[in-house]
Length: 603
Image (tube, rainbow, N blue to C red; front, side, top):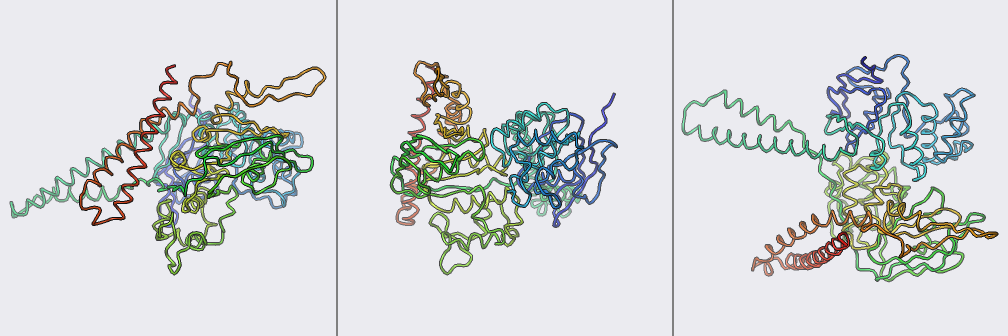
């Protein structure tokens, strides 16, 4: 017997600002579906979800929800007017006997139902909206970035709830681990077209790359055919007085087909440039204590950060990660112990709260009005890594168009605000990056690029994130803040921390004494995996990195082979020489690292 769909969209078309978002879209969501909705920032994911929820009216088409089917949408900016507390809002659609559901969700998602709406932060309001949806338990849940503002524990609770629910759901998220764990089908929005695959997010990237490869092959064939037919048309003029008009019309049709094709949006042109090298030892924290009234942040905490380290700070919201960062950066004094900062530090900060962005400024003014980026006497120029650049050209590298340059920052999506903040951050040479939740709202492709940039960055990175996959791919050290002053240092990223935790984080109990926490040192006698998760990832990534470096070296050597280059373009010669030396050094280091990891894997 055929199942009745929970939701059906037929021939949906929608246009914003003259540009089509969708055209003739058909979509069905079945009972029990677990669907990842993916696509680039700005592709229309949230808009499509609002169409599903009935909050955005399409220009044409039909939306069918069978009678009796309940659909719930997690609002990004919920309207809580008329409600005194977050709990009042979250329980507004429940019967009195069901209020326990909000309390249960509140515990899992870590929000206080008694918190007054007027004093609640944006993150608390979003958690209340998510708790409202989970407590109401509709047959179809529409979840737009539900993990934003959740810590890893709360993400784990939500993941467990969604794994056991009988409801269907459509999920937008940047969190790869979350998507991989939950989804069994994928909807992909790409240039106004929505494709569906009956496989979860785990298989998305291979599917996407295959479609793009086929698309490139078709475009190549079309270009060859147009070139061939164009040559015939030109040569035919001298060979014949009358040409085959049918063939000419076919050529015109081929050219029209090519011009109608929508080009894929490129990846953001993000780049980082290290400032002057810092000292080899960047930060040394020695037996640091910090307490706020009755809350202990850290106790007897020591950490040494060397140049090039990528240190991640993880733990529940409110445990004190930001406070510890401020202590390590010398912005907050510890109660006891000391922190020594290395020499020649140039620090750039990515702020989770986006406080560096003025929502009432335009994107243009946000860059040109920044004193660190201003070029004297040039209203349309900014300083990018010590070189003057046109504002529009630089914004285009971060996937903004000319129309957006004069729009207010307030009009940007969450992902676009994150890209603008990255544009400001990456304009400044630095040798230490402090990144507080940089992954929020970024699409998968931009996250990939950010990870590659951090891999290639010569400086040091301090990172706060709840994105488990990103932590695994970036962090070389993890500081786990576990509450009650405990901050334990582990080698590697999130998965390494989880693997070591049962071994390293033992509590030794002795009769009549308080529990003692063992130090975070891996026992030599303990059998360890040959390669950690991070090392496995590096071993897999190194061959491509070595191949890329060899190709770059070949191009630079070819450029420097020109005997006239030095006299003709001395600056270009100097830069090419410096770049060649840097890449040769990096190639040697990468080859040495590959050999060491191969030897360790085989041992």
